[in-house]
Image 1 (cartoon, rainbow, N blue to C red):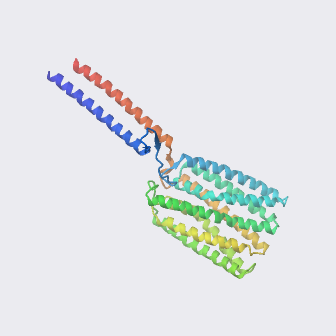
Image 2 (tube, rainbow, N blue to C red):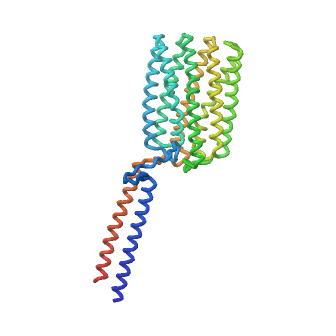
Image 3 (cartoon, rainbow, N blue to C red):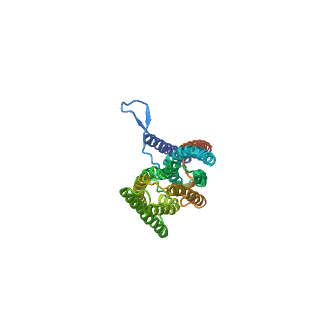
Length: 378
């Protein structure tokens, strides 16, 4: 009788434990359903997903972002290849230069997407996205080289002026986009979103960021002051233009370091670098607008050609620096986020697997209880 009572108590405890475990699973599933769904106010049975706030710069890159990067890669490749072919034809057929100008303007307009493209890639360090970024930067380098080597064959002063304006248009279009992306990054970091894999900057890295910021403020200030003096003085040529060209050329030194510094800022955990670069982009936008306005006063073909070449060199060096930075990040990432993709399908698969494992555990538990009851009965 004692053995029978002990077996009954043991069986009752096993059943109670199973019920408790099942109730915990049910509570977890109910909580998950409550978080992801809401019932209509009318009390109907239909459920609708809750629209949660989405952060562009979270902890990991998403499938949608990867798909968008692939689409932009195809667009940039098409524009750059067409541009290269037209630049080569223009050497022998001068009127094709107008088509070259049109493609170059289109290229600089599409550049508005570059801010998000490279900020996404540098922030998440995901391998596939890094290769996309490298390919985009390489076609940009190839297009920039074709423009530089064929610009000498362009004798039309209007074409040269438009090439110079298009080069600065790149900056005017790209900077507001960069400011917008930095704001998104700022608010995400302020809400402690996307900081899981962040790595604080070392003392040397902080010094590098500060040095690049100070240098950029000096150079941009020089471009802005010279351009303003040209507009006020209505100067079409002279030494002031060569000084302005010198400051404009110094921008090429800045763009060499910007990709590396942007990578440090995005994978950092501090707030001040983002704020500092927000203001730096505002100053750069003002300087670029003043430079574009001043170019309408320029009446020297040699200076026009030099401004066009420096503008293309700016983009060329920036793209080359980006390729080098992306290769370094691919080989030596700063964070652990690179191998993780925030994939909804992957998450759902994991949930299904966990539920299947739970069912298997329940079945095994039932078999164990049946065997135990049989043994006790015998």
